[in-house]
Image 1 (cartoon, rainbow, N blue to C red):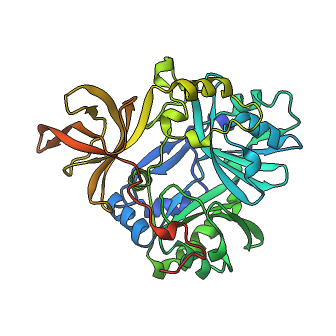
Image 2: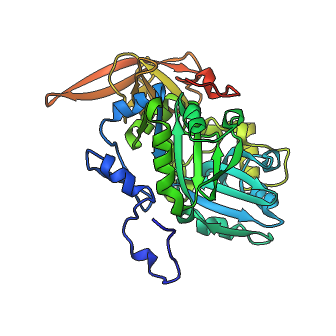
Image 3: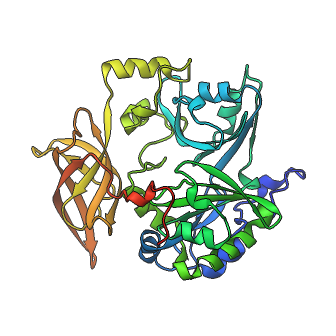
Length: 401
């Protein structure tokens, strides 16, 4: 699929876009079920979500990132603009590096989280799940900066798993094993430029590949040819959801509501309430939400986002969380059965001060088997680390498997 043509002013009439990789995805999608990510069709699973999960943890899997919202930011004030926009110090994200960030309202409520790619001097790409073009443009007032949405102009794939580096080397990307976590490198590919970042949403060794849409199909083909003997497999949304909970990664719309989408302030969250206080830097100049976040740091916050290790093998999706004395203190926001940890795991929002590591709680789980509903009060423990964090994720040079 070519880049979207905006010149005829009727692109908005399209109800759902096909990814530039759709011609390759469609034959692989044995279930013939498609979800919707932003304006794109996105497979829930191609054949079996569990097998796609295991492909990522034991070999490598490919996930289509094209629907992720992308913004190109450039100009002499690009750094100053981003530093005003997000809570972390963007000046520490050097050219050729990627940084994880959150951005807030003036009240210190999280609008979204995402990544900032420092492409070159005064040139950045911001990626997020939700769309924020109007808000981002409003914040450009007073800055000499150019901001455009480039979601349709950039095709992207996530290649994740232990054999991901070996696959890229087989594809001819010489030296890719020396790319450090959160680093960026450029490679010549089929008469165009392929950008590779050592980033991902699985908590494993992995890379993200960025290319113009006209070369999307050949990139998919070359990738699967190179990965044939390395167990490569396409992966859908359901497997990715399992992987990101194991890695302890939060997701907008699940673990927090973007501040611009909520009606009640009590339904929003601050960086501290999402365990992201380390992304707030008060040493840098003024930024959106600084005053409110400084007050919150001094006086405390309302909630804690925690990781729970839950007894039994039943998923705790949408469950209430209680103290051992049966006091309701929170809810599960994301949950899954972890094949790697061999445990029922979850992310949960608890009322402060509950949620200290080691604290024992109860999770109310309802599950159905053969049309019969059962209820269990499963014991749970708050854990401090993530559920899956292999050394290969950070090892440089990346090893072959």
